[in-house]
Image (cartoon, rainbow, N blue to C red; front, side, top):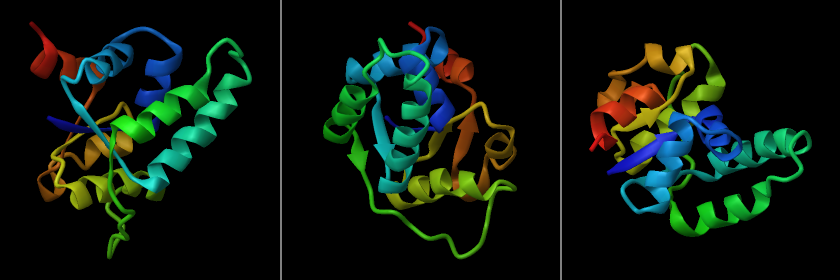
Length: 135
């Protein structure tokens, strides 16, 4: 199953425990396939480095290197018009359209409000765990 993680979900999974961490564990166990674009990778890096300065014991670069090897990377796609109220969130929707991925995991209200657009479902991390990864 292909999934796209909003930046805050990915970063939270790297630095903290909880549902985002469980999703990254599922990725490492090859239960899900992460999909990213170069634009998303840049944002992951930028936000990760900001937080890494507060948590020096976490090596964000090694995780991002692993991500570039083990994730499906699709080209950036320009949308003809804005979809989300927050234009920064459109990169996740563009990635989903480009990769034909139907699921974005996010806690961002702007993204959650556009769930269903172009057949792309946006759900929270806990909901993803309950619906797709519960055993």
